[in-house]
Amino acid sequence: MYSITLVRIFLSFIIFGLFLVQHAHSHPAGTDNQGFGFFPETEPFLPVTDEHRAAWTRVVEHCFPVNTRDSLSGHCLTSLGEFFANEPVWSYSEMYVYGGDGWLPLFHNRLGQRRNYSAADFLSADVPFWRDIFDHEIEQRQELFLRVVNDSQCIEITRNDNEGMQDHLAERCAVRELYKYATYLNACNDAHYRISWLQNIQQEWDVEPPTDVFDDKNSFEIIFLELDESVSNEALRSAAKRSLQKSYLHASWVVAQCRQHGFILKPGEIFGSYTSTDENLPWSIVPWKSTAPRWHDESKYERLLSHTHEFIMKMAIKSGDYWAIRSGYLGSSVIAEFSEDLMEGHPLLMHRTIGDSQSSVGFSLGLNPSEKALHRAKAYLLLVEEAGEEFARLEYDPAKLVEEIQYVESGGLLKLPLTSAEIEAKRRESIRKYEEEELIREAQGELFK
Image 1 (cartoon, rainbow, N blue to C red):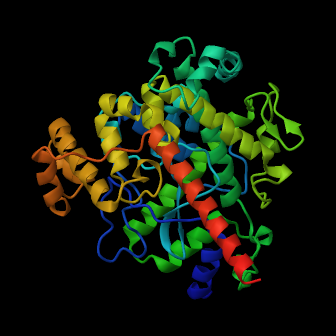
Image 2: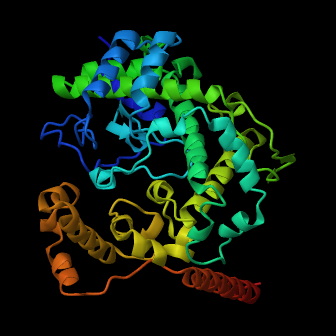
């Protein structure tokens, strides 16, 4: 029997970049959670049809047992397509793995879409499904993207000094199709990283394995060893394995779709000596396992993919696309120039985002914990109004927001995110203070010469 202590130490090295995120709408794992903050399998956010259950039965028939060493069969890929096509995109925003510190999301150098979805995001059933992204129109969408990025009016949308929503340009700039292309880029990026990590065998790791039990084992297989040894709760252990198997199959299916289409970057972007063109590039050129610095030449495609994705998403969000607004990164520096319009049109989403207690980015910038708690209270009250108190309690514990709820109900004012002008003023003030401090240091240096 191998040493479980060694397994845990080793996993803490190989599972890089992980951080704990509590799922907002999940059943608690119980008091003896053995590293699980929530049950690995959550209830679906939308109703499941008998046809969809039958599709999963075909996946089990054609794809199980899951073997990470062999290519998926044609029957398996067909069954995966039938199943995943009718799954919501947002349900696959994170992939969780089990390691030395428990059940955690695998973090990688990814593109900027939201990751923290919960039942509140599905109150409206108008959500993107994978059938909307992988719909046999990717080539046409890439051609449309190239047309839009050469349209001066569409380019104007993304300028920081062009304040307010630009929804009158939504049709001209085909922003729903742009959102789909951005989500395609994000999905392909996620899936390649996930497959690369899960199939990574120990000889390729930067740390020396503590025992030969790891010989020729990949990350997926080692996680199964860890679950068998560490998790005595059979329900938790089985659910974690099923979750990991499903994540692996989903990533494999996405990678298979992406390889058929490649990707196109925003033309004219410069990285070192390389300038992007309208050429269709294969996904194989992206260094998924590269440890090169972010500005190293090998990482140029990662950087330019990120730039292309952010450009498209900002255009789609600022043009008012419903899916893009609910899928995009809502950082204050990104959308400060149109946050008032978003607050008016999407108050629940905005108060949830601003009040996110676990986020250190986005609209939380510029607000202290007490001010953020007031936004959670407002979000709770909006959820009660829209879906009832029982539903609202799935998202927030009102016992922890008693004073804040009373304040909001009494008409108290809430601090809003910084505007573009305020962000610029803070930036200039920071520069001014830095220059003053430099002058003082230089003067003090002269005195002591």
